[in-house]
Amino acid sequence: MATTLQVKPISQQRRSWLSRNAGQLGLHAILITVSVLFLVPLLVVISASLTDEIALTRNGYGLLPSQLSFEAYQYILLDPTQILRSYGVTATVTAIGTIAALTVMSLLAYVLARQDFTWRRPFSFFVFFTMLFNGGLVPTYILITQYLKLRDTLWVLFLPYLVVPWFVFLLRTYFNTLPKEFIESAKIDGASEWRIYLNIVIPLSTPALATIGLFCILMFWNDWWLALLYINEPKLYPLQYLLYAILRNAEFLSSNSAATAMLTTVKVPLQTIRMAMAVIAIGPVAIAFLALQRYFVRGITLGGLKGE
Figure 1 (tube, rainbow, N blue to C red):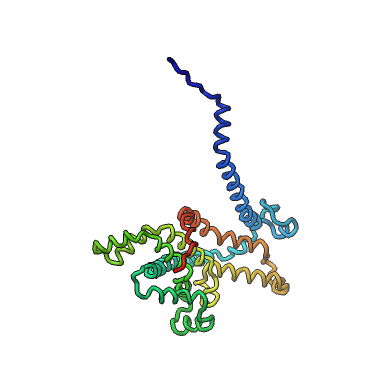
Figure 2: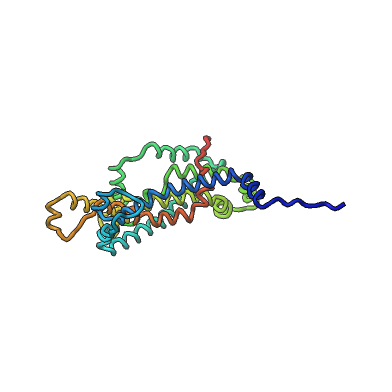
């Protein structure tokens, strides 16, 4: 007996598919809308940096420049050599500091995560204690400048941030979730602690290390405080501190009418300078986030710390 296949019309198939996937489509639409809304402030900043100062004051901020002008970038780039040098300093400090900080903190976290380490609890308390108390600004300044002799060196821009206690505890928590059977099997096979750390722990901890690495990149890239305290040589100015100095000079020229009258050839678009500085500083960090975002999404569960 022959059987006939009933083929649904295309419109009915489409309605059926839409009904099955309505929830996913709605969720995607919401996420796309939220993503676009998150981009709006960035577009406003870029637009403001390209707007004439007078037009910005008169018309306010918008998604598109009301009157196109590059005066803010021209002011910041009066000495492009210094900008490029500061970019180099910041990139060097960020690269070296991130690698060194990840190495030191992961080693410390690995030791604290090992249940068979005798001094695990005292060391954990020592790291935790530094989250609550520190030596203070004056003793730290004396130590770095008088005893360690690190003033006006690149070392001073990343050594104080090599160990961040919160990041250490996040890594320790992640290391605690790794299968203990792998480590025990490696020890039975005669693997050393260094081999276990390099060949087992590190490959299994890529999401955690990428997440902490992104935080370290942001920390080193955005830091200007250490340069304010310990750097006097202009050739060692990191980007953020150089932009801070440019902004302070612009504010002085804008508020001091006598100085502005003497420098009649210098036009100071103060508001747009602030926006241009944000645009100049945000670029490399945005690229780093895009490169690490897939690991970052997998590593955000690090926040679930468990007490011991």
